[in-house]
Length: 348
Image 1 (spheres, rainbow, N blue to C red):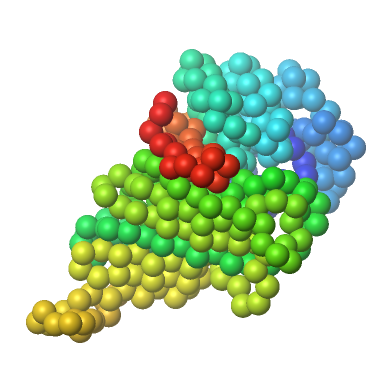
Image 2: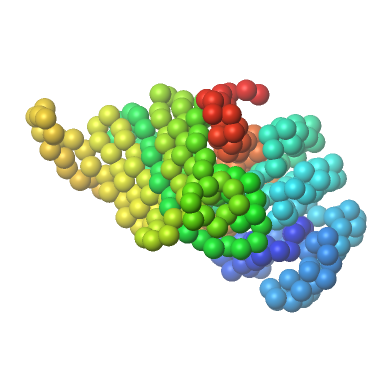
C-alpha cells in the first residue's frame, strides 16, 4: 500500500510517529506492505523541513497534490490538512481513484461533508476519518461493558470536560472554539460507548467572564439519542483550576446500575442489589480488561483499520458515512446555540 501524507504541520508528526514506531504499522513498513511514498504541503519548504525533523529524508516532497500523485502512483492519501482545504484535497484524491483517511473534522460544514460522502460512494473508494479517541482503552472497555448488558438497558450518559489550555493562535480567535475544535472527540466517544445515534440537540454556548478566547469557550448540550437514551455534555476551555481529563469524565446510567470513568484509568461500575429500599445497597462489579490491544492504539489503530478495510473491501469503523453523525452533533449544537431552538439531527 503506497500512501501520500498531505499536510506537514504539527498534527502530521502524530501520524508519522504511529506509522514508524507502532508495531501495528511499523511491521508493515518493514515488510513492504506499507510505503510512505511522498510528503505534500502547499509550501514545499515546510514539507522538506518536516522530512528532516522526522528523519524521512529519503521520501520525496511536493508542493501540490496533483504533481505528487502523478510522480508516485499512490494507493491512498493520509490527509492532515486544515479543515478549510480538506474538501479540495479529498476531492482531488477520490477523483484520482485513491482511498483517503483524513484528520477530523471530515469537512468544514455539513453541506461539504455530504458532498464528500457522495463523491466517495460514486468513486468506489474509501473516505474515512481519524477519530482516534474512540480507539482508547477506556472507551473500548465501556463500549464492551455496555454491550454485555450488565448495566441493563442504557438510559443516559453524561460527560463533563473542564480545562484551561492557553493555546494561542487560531483556537483563541475562532468562533465556537470548544464545539468546533474539541467537542467532536467527546460526541464521537458518546456514540461509540452508547451504541446509539443522535436524534436532536438543545445547546447553550457562552464565552464566560475571564475567557481568553474570542468566542464560545464553554457549552452545555442535551442530546436525544436513539434507544431513548439522553446524553448531556458540559464543557469549558477556560476553566482554571483542577482539570478533568482531555477525554472528559463520564457517568453512564442503566436500569441496573451505573458506571463512572475519570477519562484516564479509573473505571468503576456498581449495580443495585438487595431488597427494594429508599436507597438500595450497591455492589461493585468488574469492568473487564480487553483481550485484544490492537483496537486501543489510537492513531495506529485507526490507520490499521483503514488499511485493512482497503485490502479487504470492507468499511472501516470511522468511514465517512458513519462519522458524519458525529459531525452532525457538532453543527447541530452550533445551530441550536445560535437559534436557541432544539435542532433535529435526523435530516439527510
